[in-house]
Length: 157
Image (cartoon, rainbow, N blue to C red; front, side, top):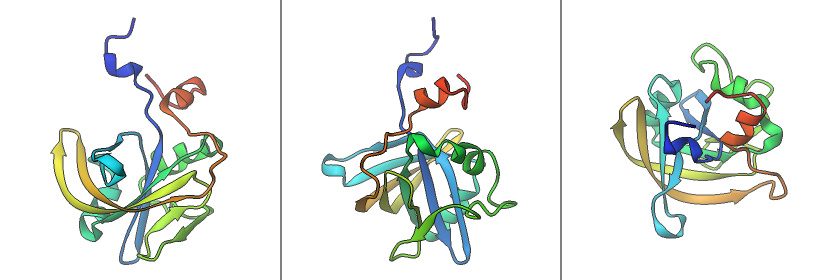
């Protein structure tokens, strides 16, 4: 029997993309939550060692890309390497929005966000974001979830 009620939650899997100057990065995040009615605000929690945090704090913009089940290769590519040492966008299908912020064209869609503020979340940095725009790209794809990744043996726990 699991020791935690939270193990029962089935989080959607996202990639958070951002840019500052010439530096772009992308990562994997499961802790993204709507925090206002009508989808006007999001909360995004990123692990504190992530290079993405450094870029977001400088640019104050990000895109939340909702990943699809056919994008499991991104778990290793975007989630288990640092963008400081690796160009995560090499051989990755993406475009730039009107803010010059990257989004993943094979994702289900993306949410353009402006960061309002950040706060300490223990081992994570928590960004409170205003939603600027939501774009559906591939509506017929299935959402990748944490349970799906666990069933495929791609994550622990």
